Image (cartoon, rainbow over all chains, first blue to last red; front, side, top):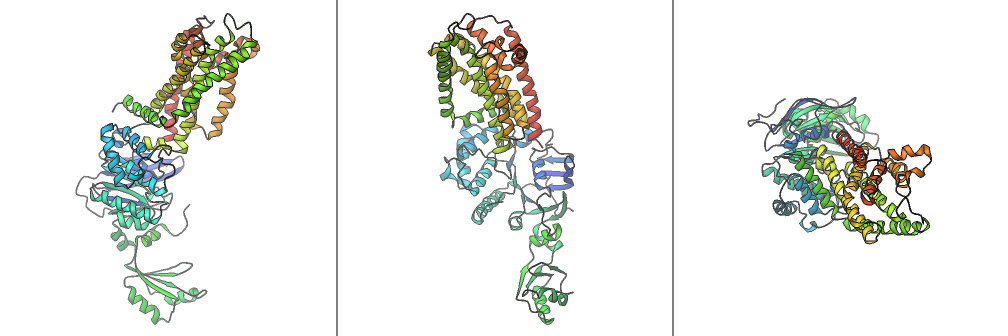
Length: 314
Length: 255
C-alpha cells in the first residue's frame, strides 16, 4: 500500500506490529513507514488502536509482537536512548499542576539531563514559541485547557526532539486555541521536525498531515495523502439534499442511479458525484425539489465515514 | 546513560517540587515533636513517676517518637504522592516518556523519601534535645536508624500503592497498620506490657525493630535483641520492598 516512494531511510518502520491487552487486540499486525520531515497522521474512531500505536512508537508501551524500529532503535532494548530523542505530547497533559509553568518545563528538561544554563535559555524560548511567556510564573492548575495543551507541547520540545509524537493534540480545545496550536505545529513542520499526529478531526488531518493512515478495529483501513485518499475512496464532489419533513423517502426512489453512490442520512441525502453541477441539473430534471441543495467538495470526513462507518463507536 | 544518574534526576524533580510546599511540612515537622513531647512526655509522664526501667518516661518515649516520626513521614510520602503520580496527575507517565525508566523512578523516589525522613528525624532530634527530653548527640546519632526505619516502610508501601485500586486502600493501610503500630509497638510502653498472645505480633512489626534500635542507640540500653538483628530485619524489608516496587511500578505504568 506504499503510496509515496520514501527516498530516505524511514524514521519509523513497523511490520506486523501488534499490541494485545489480555483478550483485547488493540493493534493487529499493522505495517507502516514514516519518512523524515513528514507529518504523518493516524486517524480512526475511538478504540481503533491509535493511542496504543503511538505509545509503542514512543517507547513507553511494550510491543506484543512484530517489529518496530524508531530512529533506527528497538524500543524494547534501547528505550531510554530512544526516549531521549523523542518529544511526546500525550492525550492527557500529565503536567504537575501544583508547580509553575516554568518549573514544569525546567524539571522535565532535567529528566533529559539538560543543564540548568541550557534550560534557563530554552525554557524562555519555548514559552515564547507557544505564547505563554506572560504566564511563565503562574501555577499550572488554573490555566485554560488550551494553555495547558500548549505548555505540554513546549514540554515535548524541551529536548529538541527528532520526532514529535502528538496524541489528539487539540481534543477539547475551542476553535481559537486549535488554530493557535495548528499554527505552532505548522511552524515545527517547516523547521523539519517529523510529526506523528493522532486525531479524529478530519480538518486537522487535512491541514497538517502529508500522509496518513485510517485505522479501524485495530487494522489499517487505508493509507495515503489526504488528496489521494479522497480520490481513491470518495468522489470529487458531494451534493447534499435536504427535504421537507416526510418527503425524503419518496424522493429517494426518484434519485436512484443519479450518482456513483447515494447515502441516506436521517436529515439529508448525499449524492457522491464527479460533477456536482451536472448532478444538480439531473436532480431537477427528475422533478425532485428538495428544500435545499448544496454542492461541496469531498472531504477526508467522507472518506473516514465510508471506511469506518457511521455507527457510533464508544 | 547510567541508571544512578537517571534516579538522581527523579530525586531532583522531587526536591524541586518540594520547594513549593516545604513551609507547610516544616511547621508540622517542628510542631508535632513539641506537642507530643509536651503532652505525652511531660503531661502523661508526670503520672508515671517510676519511669520505665531505669529512665524517666519522657526519656523512654523520645527515641520511640523519633522512630514513629520516621515511619509516618515515610508512609505518607510513599502513598498519596505516589498515587498522585500514577493516577491523579499522571506525572509519572510524563517522566516515563523521558529517558527515565520505572526502576529509576522507584529508586529516585525512595532516595527522596529517605531524604525527607532524614529531615523529619533531624528536626525531631533537635527539638527533643532542646526540650531536654533526650541527649541531643545520641539522638542525632540515631537519625540513620530513623532513616532505615523509614525506608523499611516506604519501599513496601510504594510497592503496594502502585497496585492499590484507589485511595481507600491507602486509608486502610493507615487505619489498620500504621496507627496500631504507632500505639502498640513499644513507643509508649514496653511490648512486655501487652497480653502474652499479642507480644509476638508486636515484636514482628517493623516499627518495633525501629523503636528498639533507636532506643538502644540513644539510651545505650542493651535491649534483649541485638541491634544487628534490627538492622538486618529493616534492611531486608527495605530491599524486598524496593524489588517488589520495581515490579509493581512496571506492571501498572508500562502497559
